[in-house]
Image (cartoon, rainbow, N blue to C red):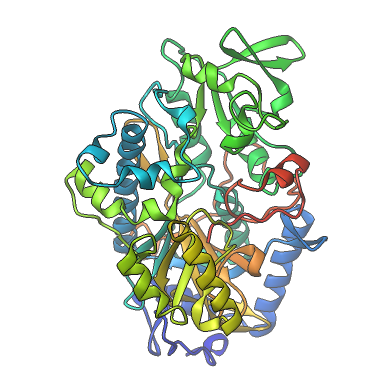
Length: 524
C-alpha cells in the first residue's frame, strides 16, 4: 500500500470498489499506482487548485445564503468495460420499457386490462397528467433524456434505485468534472483508455431534432429555462450553448393559432422543439397552474395539434413515481419479453396490507420514502431515527399508505475520497444519462457519480453535504496515451452557475416562481 492509501480501511460492511481486502481491484490498479507517486503535499495542492478553479469559474451552489464551490473529489471513480456493458444494456432496456409504458397509459391502457399494473396505481399518482392523454409524439419518443439512479449492493451488483424521466439534471457536471480532473490528474488520465463524454450535446441535439413535427426538415430547437436563479440554470445555459440553440424563458415565447413562436430582434420565429427544464405544472397556465409565469399559455394545445414537440413529454412524471417503480420488472417482461438486466432494490408497497403489517413491525430496521419525493426529502432511515420520529412516521404511513414505500438499508458501495488531507472510503451512487432519438437509446459512458462526503452518510444529495466524482468508463484493458478530454463544441469557458445543486429541475411553486437561489431538488 502506498503512502496516500496506507491508512485506507476497506473492511466496512459496504462493497469497496477500489479494494478487495488489501488488494486493489484490477481496473483500479493503474490509478492506485499513479496516485501513489504523489505526496500528500502534492495532492493537497492539486485539490486546492481544483476547488478554487470551480469557484473562480462559477461552478458553485448556495447553502444557507453562502456561495460555495460545488464539491468535486479528485479521486475518479473507475468502471471497467465489462461492468459498464451491463449498465449500458440495463439502462437501454429500462428506457425502452418506460417508453412503452408511457405510450400505453396515455393510450390504450393494455397493461391495465392484462393485470400487469393496477389502474389505480397510475391514476392516483400525483404526477399522472390527464392533459397528456392522446398526445402522440411525432417519432414516438416521450423520454428523450433519462437519468437512472444506480447503487451497488454488498456483493457489488448494480441495482436501480429510481428512474428520472421528467427533467433529469446533472449532465453538466459530468462534462465539467471530466475537464477538471483530466487537468488535475493528467498523468493518471494519460494511462487509462477513458471513454469520452464530450459528445453528449451533439447526441442530445440530434435526438431533439429527430423529435420535430412531421414535415419539418430543419427544426428550430430551444431550451426553456425557469430563469437565471434556478438551481440548474448553469446546466441549461451550458447545454444551450454547446448545442448552438437559443436559451429562452416563458416570456420569450407566444402561442398563436396552435403554433409556438419565439420573440427575436428580427420578429417572431416558429419553434418546433422545446427542450423544457420547467415542470409540467408550471408549463402552461391554461391547463395547469393559472398563476405560473414560467411557461407559456397554449403550449399544450400546440403540442396536441402536432405543431411543437415538448421534450421530455408532458406526463412523464408518473414513471418516476416510486410505487410505479416497483412494477418495472414486470413491465419489462410484459412489454419487451425479457428478464430485467438490472434488478430493483427490494421494496415493500405500503398500500398492500401484508407489506404494511411487516414494515410496521420493522420500522427501526428499514428506510421509508415518500413515493413522489426528491432531493432526499422526506426519507426516514429507521436505524438512525428516534422513537419520536418513528412514531410520527407510523402515523403518516397509516394515514396515507399509498404515498410510501419501504426498502432495506442498502450499504452503498464505497470509493476512495479525499477528506481533510487523507483518503477515506465514502458512499456513492451513479446516474447514467441516456438519450433516445427514436432509433437507439444511447447511454453516455460515464454518468454522474454522487458521493456522500460526511462519514457514514448514505444520502448523496448536495443538500446533505454531498459532492461528485468524475466517472471513468474504460474502453478496454491495457493502457493507451490519452490527451486531455476535449471540451464539447462551443466556448471552453464555463458559464456562471447561480446555485447549482445536482438533481432534477423540480421544485415547489413558490421556489420556481421566485427562481429561488436556495433550491435543492436532488432525487434521493
